Length: 74
Image 1 (cartoon, rainbow, N blue to C red):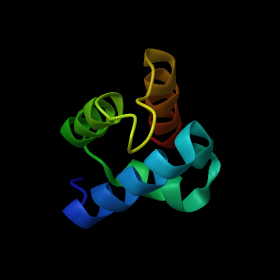
Image 2: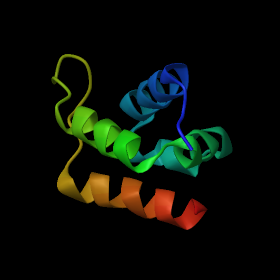
Image 3: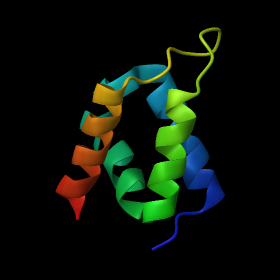
Image 4: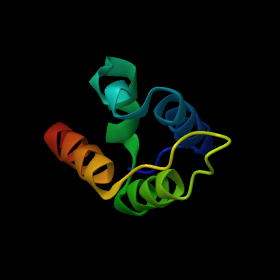
Protein backbone atom coordinates (compact mmCIF):
# COMPACT_ATOMS: atom_id res chain seq x y z
CA UNK A 1 0.00 0.00 0.00
CA UNK A 2 1.14 3.54 -0.66
CA UNK A 3 -0.08 6.35 1.56
CA UNK A 4 -1.06 9.72 0.13
CA UNK A 5 1.34 12.60 0.67
CA UNK A 6 -1.27 14.25 2.92
CA UNK A 7 -1.26 11.16 5.16
CA UNK A 8 2.51 11.34 5.50
CA UNK A 9 2.40 15.04 6.34
CA UNK A 10 -0.34 14.53 8.94
CA UNK A 11 1.69 11.73 10.48
CA UNK A 12 4.84 13.86 10.51
CA UNK A 13 2.99 16.73 12.18
CA UNK A 14 1.69 14.48 14.95
CA UNK A 15 5.04 12.79 15.51
CA UNK A 16 6.86 16.14 15.61
CA UNK A 17 4.37 17.59 18.07
CA UNK A 18 3.91 14.64 20.42
CA UNK A 19 6.97 12.47 19.87
CA UNK A 20 6.93 8.75 20.52
CA UNK A 21 3.83 9.13 22.73
CA UNK A 22 1.81 9.83 19.58
CA UNK A 23 2.28 6.20 18.55
CA UNK A 24 -0.27 5.19 21.19
CA UNK A 25 -3.09 7.02 19.40
CA UNK A 26 -5.35 5.01 17.11
CA UNK A 27 -5.39 7.57 14.28
CA UNK A 28 -1.60 7.77 14.25
CA UNK A 29 -1.35 3.98 14.17
CA UNK A 30 -3.79 3.88 11.24
CA UNK A 31 -1.68 6.37 9.31
CA UNK A 32 1.45 4.42 10.13
CA UNK A 33 -0.14 1.22 8.85
CA UNK A 34 -0.86 2.92 5.51
CA UNK A 35 2.83 3.55 4.78
CA UNK A 36 4.81 1.31 2.47
CA UNK A 37 8.42 0.36 3.26
CA UNK A 38 9.95 3.30 1.38
CA UNK A 39 7.59 5.75 3.08
CA UNK A 40 8.38 4.57 6.61
CA UNK A 41 12.08 4.94 5.84
CA UNK A 42 11.43 8.47 4.56
CA UNK A 43 9.48 9.36 7.71
CA UNK A 44 12.23 7.95 9.93
CA UNK A 45 14.91 9.92 8.10
CA UNK A 46 12.89 13.12 8.33
CA UNK A 47 12.32 12.63 12.05
CA UNK A 48 16.05 12.21 12.62
CA UNK A 49 16.81 15.37 10.62
CA UNK A 50 14.43 17.63 12.57
CA UNK A 51 15.95 20.98 13.53
CA UNK A 52 15.84 21.89 17.21
CA UNK A 53 13.88 25.08 16.49
CA UNK A 54 11.06 22.91 15.06
CA UNK A 55 11.15 19.85 17.32
CA UNK A 56 13.78 17.57 18.82
CA UNK A 57 15.30 15.12 16.35
CA UNK A 58 14.35 11.53 17.05
CA UNK A 59 17.03 9.27 18.48
CA UNK A 60 17.89 5.82 17.16
CA UNK A 61 15.88 4.39 20.07
CA UNK A 62 12.85 6.47 19.09
CA UNK A 63 13.11 5.21 15.52
CA UNK A 64 13.29 1.64 16.79
CA UNK A 65 10.02 2.26 18.64
CA UNK A 66 8.51 3.69 15.43
CA UNK A 67 9.51 0.61 13.42
CA UNK A 68 8.29 -1.68 16.19
CA UNK A 69 4.91 0.06 16.26
CA UNK A 70 4.58 -0.37 12.51
CA UNK A 71 5.54 -4.06 12.65
CA UNK A 72 2.87 -4.59 15.29
CA UNK A 73 0.28 -3.33 12.82
CA UNK A 74 1.17 -5.69 10.00
